[in-house]
Image 1 (tube, rainbow, N blue to C red):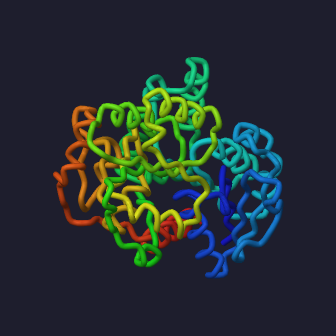
Image 2 (tube, rainbow, N blue to C red):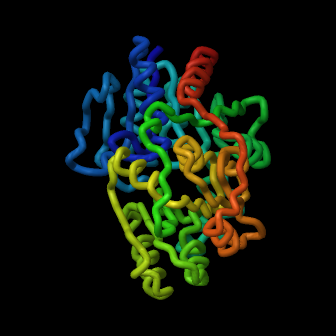
Amino acid sequence: MKILYVLEHYAPHKGGVERLFQSVAENLQKENHQVTVITTQLQSAHSSDELLNGVRVIRLPLRNRFLFTFFSIPFVIYQALKHDIIHTTSYNAAFPAFFAALFCRKKCIITFHEVWDHLWWNIPYYYIGRKTLFYLFEKIILALPFNQYIAVSEATKNALIKSGVDNRKILRIYNGIDYNSFAPYIHEAPQTPTICYYGRLGVSKGLNELIEALQLITSRYKLLLIIPKHPTFIYKQIIKKLEQNQLMDKTIIKHDLSDKELFSTISKTSFVVIPSWSEGFCFNAVECAAMHIPVVASANTALLETVSGKHIFIENKDLKLAIEKALQYQWHESEIKYFHLTDTVEAYKKVYEKIY
C-alpha cells in the first residue's frame, strides 16, 4: 500500500499525537509499505523534504496552521495522486486531505482526537469572534463525509455520534504508548511536595484554574510547570497570572526538555495535575500511570477512561479540595490500565487493509 499522511505536526515536533503517527508510519514503512507525510515546517532548520527513519517527510513552509489548511491543497493533491489511501487528523489538516481525496478519488481516513462543540463558548483566552470561527470550522469538518472515522476514546466516539457522524463509520482505537520506554523511570516523591503540570498550552487545559486554586492553598509546596513558550499570548497570560497570585517564588518553569529529561523530571515530583476541561485521550494520564506517578485529574470526557493507578478526580470542579487531598495522601487506587502502542498500530493496519 501507498499511504499519505496529512498532519499539522510531525517529528521532531514533540507531542503524544506526533509520537503515535511517527510510530504507525515507521512500522508500516518497515513492512514495505510506501509512506509519505505532508506537514508544516515550524522551524527553518527542519528539512523541507527528508527521509526520517525510512518515512518521506515533506514539510511545507507554512508555520500558521490555518495557512496550511488552505495553501497546502495543491501539494496534497500532487502527492495524493501517487498514493492509495490518505490519513489525516482533526482539525487543520482535515480539509486539504478531504479535498485532495475527493479530487483524486481516493479513500480518506480521519482520526478525531476530540470534539468540543459548545465547549468553544466557555474556554478562556479567545475572544468571541475567534470562538465563533473555531466552532463553525469544527462543524464544517464534522460535516465532511470521510470514508472512516477513528475515535481515540469512547468519549470522542460518543461526541462524534452526537455531532451527527454515522455510527457505522466510526471505529474506536485507543492511542497507545511504548511501555518499555518508561521502564527506567520510577516514581520517587521529593521531600518538599512538588505539584507538576506538563504539556502544551492549550486553551482547554485548565492551567488558569490550577493557578487560582493553588493561590488558596496554604500548605507548603512547589509548583513545577513544564510548558512551551508558545502560543506566546497564552504563555504571557500564565506568567501574569502567576505574578498576580504571588506564586512566582513557588514556581519552577522548564521548557523544551527531551523525552528523557521530561520523564526523569516528572518521576521525581509528588504528583501531576491534569485540570483539563476536555480530553480526547490524554497521554499524560497514561504516561503517569506507566511510571506510577499519582495524578489529580478532571472527572470528564476521556479522563474517566484513561486515568488509573493512584489518582484523585476533581469533584464538583473543586480543584483546591482535590489538591489538598493529594497533599494529605488521600489517594484512590485502581488497577493500572494499559494502552499498548503495538495494539494501536495493529488496529490501524487492519483499517488500512479494510479500506484498501
